[in-house]
Image (cartoon, rainbow, N blue to C red; front, side, top):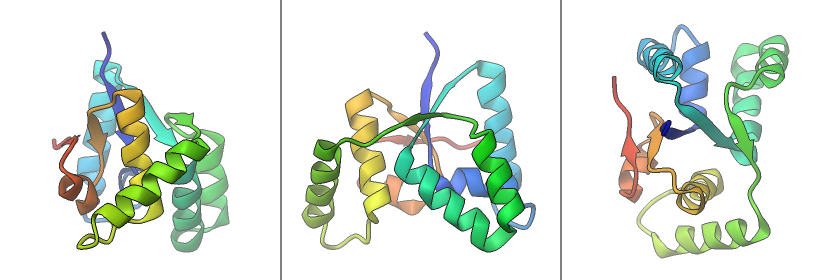
Length: 134
């Protein structure tokens, strides 16, 4: 059975921006994903967040190009997922989880995904997933 791996904004962005401190690591992780044929999954929230980040930092052309070939299956958050995400945010008052982070946690739990490609400290802080390293 092929591994399912969730992809966060930080991994998508690092793979595209040569100046990003995690660029080489992100490229190696995506290369490993292709070699090992991982099933890559992300959310519609991550797509929106990533598009906005690419648009702001790398320009409209790069943002459109990324949207045309998002290298992951996009899962849509449900209304119940959104409600659960808000509960998570309020359950961790000492953390600064964004709604996008919390939606990612909820989707990963709902879909049974235990691994994530991310350079965002929030996945480690939440503590329920294996953050992949090279």
